[in-house]
Amino acid sequence: MKALRNVLNKILNVLAGVSFIAMVALTCWQVFTRYVLQNPSSWSEELVSYLFAWASLFGASLITGERGHMNIPVIVEKMGEKAQKFFAIFGELIAFAFSAVILVYGGIKITELAMGQMTSSLGVAVGVFYIVLPVCGVLNMIYTVLNIVEISRGTYEEKKEEV
Image (cartoon, rainbow, N blue to C red):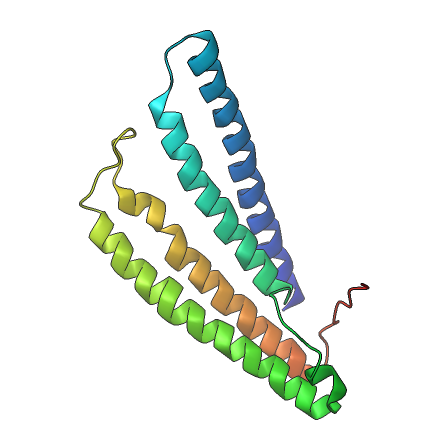
């Protein structure tokens, strides 16, 4: 379990990092072509917007793996250990359902639909850029299952943030 989580974390960190570095490089390229060459690059702006979505979704999957999604634990923290475990698992089940329905099912549908549409500047099927939705949905589902198993076994280390 821990090995799978570590491999997924490393892959997602690399993908998110590469997306971010590519965004920075392409944005610099766009500024250079616009202000120095006086001939703006249209394709780089379009690619940066798609890379931003990719980096965001990869980052969201990493947060799912860390159980770092937003929550308001004020009431749950006052409950007993079994109730806390129940609500932690319940939250993971909701995240799993969201990932399955919205990201995987919806992502596959929108990807299929967008394969016939071409991007304006890049000339690539829009569906190629939407494929990240079902991929990250599956990753989220894997992470939520890992989280549920660890919560059930009591092996998950809760990260407490100090305010």
